[in-house]
Amino acid sequence: MIRMSRRLSAALAAVVGLALPAAAAAAEGGRALERPGDWTQVMVITGLSVIALFLVASIGRLYQMRRSLHWRFQDPDDGDHGGAH
Image (cartoon, rainbow, N blue to C red; front, side, top):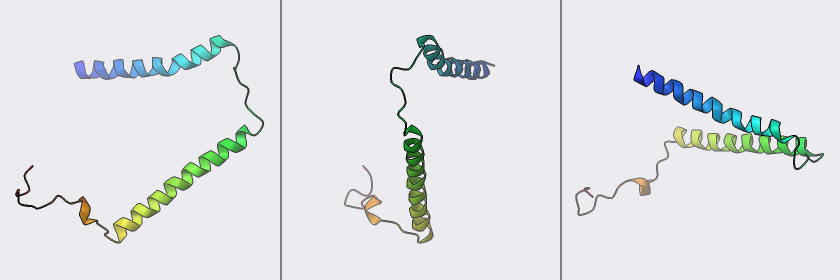
C-alpha cells in the first residue's frame, strides 16, 4: 500500500510539474520573442537531422553486432595482479 501511494504521489507531482509552465505562460500574456518566418523549416530540418543521426548510429550498431566486432582494449588486463583490483 505504501509503494502504491508513493507511485501515486510521484505521478501527481509529475503532472503538477508539467502543468506549471503552461500556467505561467497563460498568465504572462504574450511571447517575449515572436517566431521568425522560417521557424517551421528550421524545426523540420532539425528533426530530420536528429532522425538521420539515430539512423546512422543504429546502422553502425547493427553492423558491429552482425560482424561480431569486439575491441580488445575494452577487456580488463590479465597482468601480474591476477585480475583483482
